Length: 170
Image 1 (cartoon, helix red, strand yellow):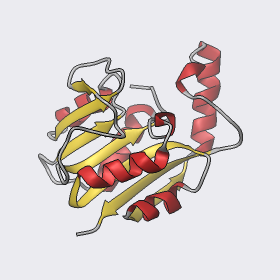
Image 2 (tube, one colour):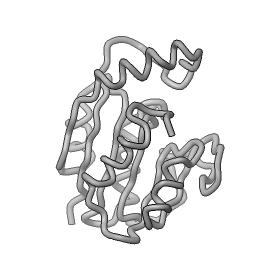
Image 3 (tube, one colour):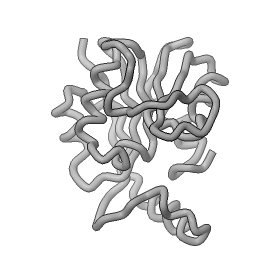
């Protein structure tokens, strides 16, 4: 599980910071191979994923900017390295907000070319944890260049990499 900075340890940390209740329902937006969905299920959560190009079990085909789920379907939404590549970070934040239940939690880590905290607050989230992980992202990206796997992060200028945990109001 290393398709994002920090790998599985980072994913576990996000889940811990979110303090989701046992058996909570979680959507992975931009789930790719489904590694995070697998981990969430191993930890006892009811998890599924959505991706424009699903490459694993428990990941359905679909656009995370327009998911097929009704309003308030999930206790948590997680996304790592996917909101930026969706092409519309603000729309991804709005969609995450829409599918979350009241008091639901967003667990997000991504490349940021604008203020992700401000964008999340504009979408309606209360920020409960925010962390700059730019140093980890640089190391990850240099390793990706070394492996010849840089198509996963389309870079366009100076950026940061942030982890953000946000809560939807009641």
